[in-house]
Image (cartoon, rainbow, N blue to C red; front, side, top):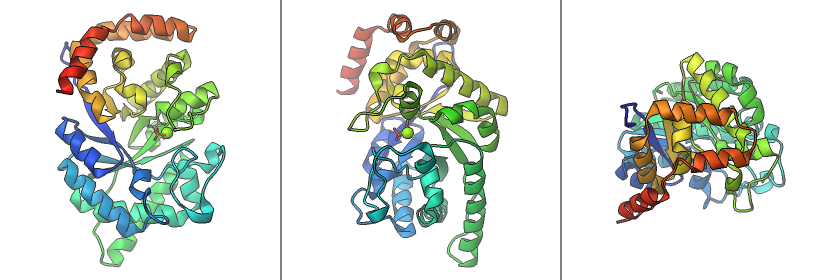
Length: 322
Ligand code: PEP
Ligand code: MG
């Protein structure tokens, strides 16, 4: 809760079940981003639907019924796993990454969707599509899900529960089409790591880390603002699952921009929760309004950093590390 009683949901980003279990133990309400690329890291080839199913059952058990947001395989140069000849290399355009890559390689998409549907009785799953650029890919995944659910019922394998379908907003076209995407999807999640790269025309570094020093770029906050407005007009939830969601320096600003769901690495939860409890929404909104009027990253940085008490954060971090 913020100081003035507004509820903020803290979810965790996870890649493997141990991380998911630790996040639940640290008080995360669920998994806001399950990076499924990690589930297949040590496999020889693309995972089978049985391997997907088993992994999602283990994750659901690890978080004890909390929501698990399964981000469909986001194959990109920064997140490789052995795909044999299909290995995507180099700088791929959006049209060949994330959900677009899966739609062109339907055996991968079918195996993953069937795996999620088969695991459905074990947990509270949602699907999240990476690198969405418009509404077409959402419609195609919904059609395929309906078809696969029928198939699984016919085969006597599973009676499938409906699974909500969310869109990652992490490309420039997705920001521009946010009102339409918000109507077509069940929820939105802002992937600010990639979005920042696209806005700046910059790459993530060689380790796949976002270019975090540039996170003060005013265009990023204008984009977040537009997406939050679009989600709210469509009555859909929007979260942030990029690194900025776990950076306490930005918490007040993100709350001021209207974000109420933050998904982060588990070691960030204690600090962000502390900043949330110290924030009041009226002053957060004022900060957001000011930031939206600024022109340069330097101006944003000065204003945002002036809000943060580094000593309090340090004490919190020390306390949470025991
Ligand atoms: C993002 O792009 O912000 C995101 C959360 O996804 P990933 O870091 O896995 O690309
Ligand atoms: Mg991304």
